[in-house]
Structure formats: C-alpha cells, structure tokens
Amino acid sequence: MTAPSTGSITAGSALLAPGLLLVTGTLLTVTIVLSRLAGAAEAPMLWFLSASMGGGGLILLGVAAASGQARGVWKVLLAYSLGAGVIQAVSMATAYLAVAHVGIGYVSLAFAFPLLATYVLALAVGMERLAWRRAAGVTVGLAGGLMIALSKYSGLGGNAEAVGWVLAASAIPFILAGGNLYRTRFWPRGAPPLLLAALMLIFAAGLIVPVAVATEGTPVAASLWQDPALLTLTLLNIAAFALKFVTYFKLQHVAGPVYLSQIGSVGAAVGLPVAVILFGETLPDGFALAVALIVAGAVLFQLRRTS
Image (cartoon, rainbow, N blue to C red; front, side):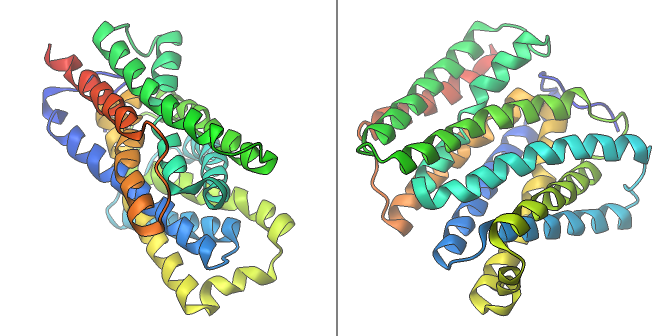
C-alpha cells in the first residue's frame, strides 16, 4: 500500500477518481437526507449519529479483518484514527444538529465550501503548488456558494437562533478542510484505507456518546431500535456511512485532499434539488446563477491536469 496522494492524480487513477467523487458526494447527501428524516421523526440526533457511525465503522472493521487488511502498527493507527475521529465527530454532529434549523439545502451547500479552505491550507503547508486555473476554479465556485449563503442569511429576518445555526453550519467547511489535510499528512505508512475509515468512524461514534448522554439522556437512545421507523432510518444510515467511507478514503488515497474536497460540490448539486422536491424547501434568490458558478468552478478545477 503506497502513501496517499498529496495532490497529483496519476494516469491509473484519472478515470477512477471522478467515479469515486460522484459516488462519495451522492452518499454524503444520502446521510444528510436521512438525518433530516430522523429529525422529523423526533429521533435523538446525537444518538442517531453515534449509532450510524459506530455501526458503519464496525461493518468496515469486520470487512477489513476478513480481507486481511487489519494490519499495521496499532499504536500509530489508533493515534491517527483518534485525531481523525475528533474532526469527524465535530463536523458531523454540527451538520446533524443544524439540518433541522437551516435545511438540507444549506447543509449540503456547506459541504461544498471545504474546497477553497483545503486548497488554501494545502498551499500554506506546501502540500499543493499554486496553479492559476485551479485557483480560479476554486474562487469561482466559492463565489457561487457565498451568493447562496448570503441569500440564506438575509432571509432569516433577524432570528437570533436561526442565525446561530447558520453560523454553525458555515463552520463545517473549515473543520472538514483541517480533517482533509490531517488525514493526508499523517496517514500511517502502509495502512489500508478501509481499516483507517473503520477506526475513524468507531472513534467518532465513541466521542459523541458522552455528549449524547449529557444533552439527550440515555433512555431516548432505545427509541432507535424500538421504533420501527427510526430503526429503519438507523440501519439505512449505517449502510450509507459504511459505503461512503469506503469510497471516501479510497478517493483521498488516490487523488489527495484538495480533489477530495470536491465531494461537497457534488453533494450540493444532489442535495439542493432533493431539498426542494422532497422537503419543499425554498430556493434562495440567485440560485441559478450561483449553481452555474459552482459548476463552472468545478469544471475549471477538473481541467487543471489536462492543460
């Protein structure tokens, strides 16, 4: 197993990376939609998230063990996975709690912003070289995202609680950007992506449990397997997390942290129509122009390696 890419896409992964990007971004939206449904069904959201990540992690750990991938220096693997788990727990808990207040559309869009943050941080630490076409693509895409964010903010009418949740959701990209770089920079040499994904999810789930106990209590956790609707949503989300992080870590391994950050743009492209069609959310003003900018930015970014 080679070290993960820090930015360059090899000829062998040129076709694999876009496919992984599409699948991972779509699965990201699936987990957000399931969280919105769980919230509507009055699920304890932190328990729901912990069960989803923990269940997904255990599935991946079982697959890694069965396929002979559960190998490596465990002291290093566990330290790395704990750090990745902290970042994952904070970002996903913020998203799952915010989605009921700001909607699927905005949370999906928040996941599109890490592209710029990751690229800038990667430049700062020397993991990327400045490429003007890539920088232009990131900037154009960000302009579209900011248009929607500002429109969302202006439509809140001074609601302090809603503003707070918008700000919390807007912090997600910066948390994710740090996670993207952390996982690439400190990836344990020779460690299989599947094993790292499993351990990260298990640690993230464990870190959320004390917060769930303190804020939601322990009795409500039973509703996740006693209520048929919530049980179904929980099992679906476990499967979605397991599948997402198989492709997520594989994508990071073959294409690097900045390329990985584009999953948010895919998630937004899928999540916004779902928010409108299935949940009746209202599109913000200037939506068409904003989406056009996001798509144009992604195209510019993708063209970097072919020019």
